[in-house]
Length: 305
Image: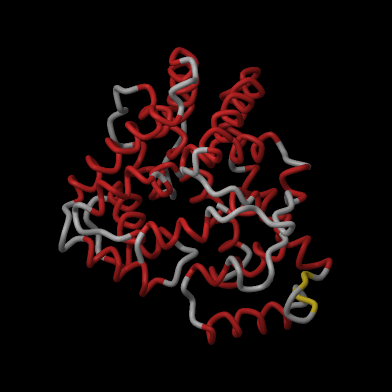
């Protein structure tokens, strides 16, 4: 699937269904930070320039996404990449990774992705004070440098790389590192509750206000796997029918969110009194990215990342 096909659907005009989820309107400090950097951290996934450069290497939309994100892990086999990505059907992710390895090396994927992302973000944020970009980038890199990578493979991979010299690239790299840090912790939180990735996808989409299957269906799990997960959630008392969370299901999903936030306490504490200023700046820059169509406009997508 090509970038043009995906972007045509993802960047369609907003609809009345695109309401802001409650988790966003009542966000904790950790969640506010996470939502503020999401459009920046995912710039490599949605930037047309990144896809143009990777397409020239022979990669389609998903090949660009998987190879660009997983390249920080080095050159593992597909099963390792699929395990780290967690939410996606492992055969798809592993297969995409291994196919990509036939057309691009890990070093090329890193160089192309990081270089094009920095260039693209500089263009998108051209009207922002460069000194502010550098200041927030330095604040976030300082936070990342303090964080422990144990048990967080994708975060560890990003953190192990040298910081980019370019302030736009460094800002993006720091946002990416923080996203992977939270994401790795989030996977640990739901696994600790005994949930499978498919079950978690279903809980998340209903919790955010998506119709059943609209979000989880993009993770390529089979209908059989999805229906099995739904039946298991129903049996556990987490789903009322197929389309709504019970009070217990909502409480479970909220407890996973709270646990994920708790594992971000060091990030929040490291920013200290600067948190609100950093969040406000990132929010503003994230909106610029949304307006430039380098991040999807649906607030549920931003909250689900």
